Image 1 (cartoon, rainbow, N blue to C red):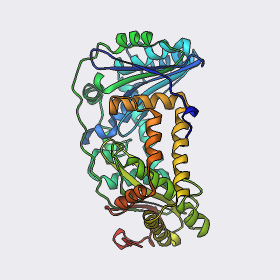
Image 2 (spheres, one colour):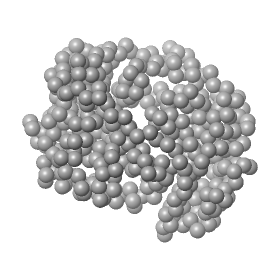
Image 3 (tube, rainbow, N blue to C red):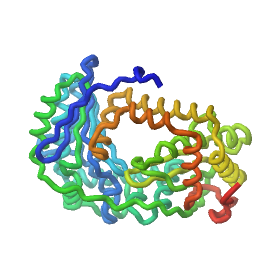
Image 4 (spheres, rainbow, N blue to C red):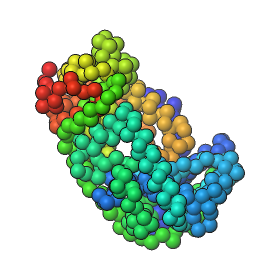
Amino acid sequence: MNQNLFSENPVEITTLSNGFTVATEATPNVATASLGVWVGSGSRNEQASEHGLSHLIEHMAFKGTTSRSARQVAEDIENVGGEINAATGVEYTSYAARLLGEDISVALDVIGDLLTKSVFDKQELAREKSVILQEYAAVEDTPDDLIYDVFQETAFSGQPIGRPILGRPETINSFDETAIRRFLDREYIPANMALVATGPIQHAQIVEQAERLFGHLPVHEIQPSEDGIYKGGEKRLPRDLEQANIVFGLPGLSFKHKDYYALHLFAHILGGGLTSRLWHEVRETRGLAYVIDAFHWPFSDCGIFGIGAGTSQKDLAELLDVALECAWLATENISEEEMARAKRQMKVGMLTALESPGGRIERIARQLLTWKRLIPVSEVVRKVDALTAGEVCQAGRTAISGNRTLVSIGPIDDLPALAQLATKP
């Protein structure tokens, strides 16, 4: 790839005395600024009794602070034309906004309020629990969403990393202000937080405001999450539906693993686009599914590889057989044409994300929280370009030789048991 196609702006980084990280990327030729605070804590950091608490806290942050009502939180951002949102993941929670560069102090002040001055009013808490329970019900009623929650829960059974982010009704209903503040005191700590901003901004001004908003937070040691251990297994949810949804899984790799990029490339070749092996054989040649893909979800200490599809009950067995055969064949031989195409696909995916301000600040925040340094795009590109077909095949062989996961939802009477699936073509 021509390295001149993507130029990285310098990123200034300052760590406050309490460990809170501030990073800025000045882009003076744009009008808008994006900023956010990332917390290196998500659903996998919850104890069993806290299942779903990270997500509830993210919702409750917008329900009023000691200086702003819930309405004022929204008005202060939207009065200057901005937008604000938050998201909860397995390993991170984020609070981010985008608005005119001249108003960045407004967004930073609001986010500072949300993270340090939320009041967690009882009535607002009751209302938000109801909203989340509706969100939970919506997922339960959407098989092609639900199946991926079930998939991860089955693959990492009995572990925090396997629990669905939304939680369960019984835990959601149990949360109170005491539980919320206990979690915040343990997880929302300066050493585990990063403020990142990009746009027509001044680093010194952002640092000064961050010091005022977050510099008072007490120093605490980061509490490590429980190790994620892929186990595999089987889960079936028979339902009266038109289509059966299935996900077949294998052990994946951490994004810190030396073979991470090789396995990611294997997923692209197997099921990453309209020219992938699974799409060509399952969808185009045999007509066994409308959509089929392969994916690799990496985490900080483990990962999971999967193949997902929806099909009719009568085609379930054949689809699985064909998909497994495609996977095995891909571990034996990958052409240079496939390698070149998959490498290009990976680069385009990465660079597309980095062409949006939100994508850039998220990348910076995650790298600082995980690696304590920024990883240049050129370093990633070099690693991808250096991969050989043999290394990618070997990564696929290692995955497909591991424990298997099979989850299914819908009319699944004809689905063979996990133990009956062929271990080799």
